[in-house]
Image (cartoon, rainbow, N blue to C red; front, side, top):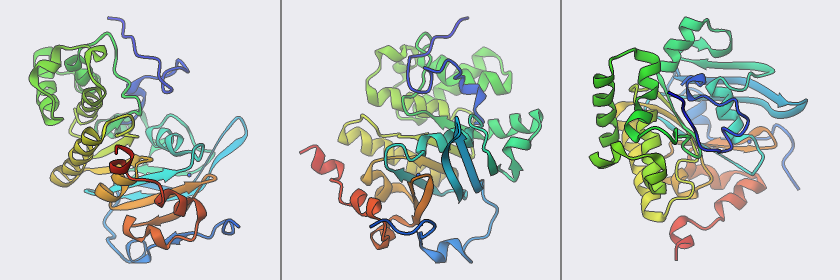
Length: 295
């Protein structure tokens, strides 16, 4: 069967395949605000995801300049930053789609970019991904879309794949009849939930989410936030999400990492963001929340 996928920023390059994924007066450079109790001497349990001094570039243009970050089980870390700061590209590097020039991407204790094929397959089975524009195959039903990672990683028979897919569709808050619809027949909120259902299809331990509430109305955005929060807490999933939504950051994220000019300039719990001296962080906090944008 030939799959067709909508033309989104993730697919226009022609190189996208969901199964290729495993799953940014200024302060002086290097002057960052962090909330030290969490970063030094806090919970020292092994992190699900660890980035160490990550440096990337495209066509010789530096993107990330020494990014270091970790995400633990049950924790939601939000990444914010100005346009072009490298937020979504950082996720692609974590997914295995953008090899770093230097530094380490470590998942479950394994260096992603030096792992063998068998190790990569195991890592992939433990990760789930939601792309910014969902990246659903337009010629497959929702059920078939959700079953794609299961089919790729498990080799289970079709009847069992579809049964598991239906469970994940329900877990994402979609009615049963949506399973037989094509992506083009879904509302924006339904498509986002379908993307989340596919992201959790393999019962991942790590979720990578790119702008999970973009383009959604106030009520649907809050429902998606609640769904992500509940997944992280109930299933003890580590979540790293890129967002521009102030509400998402403060309502569900345990920590916030602010990217500017390819560096993390602030890393702390959202409630401490107001202490950051960085002008962009201050401007971000002054943005109107979604409840005011809707009025």
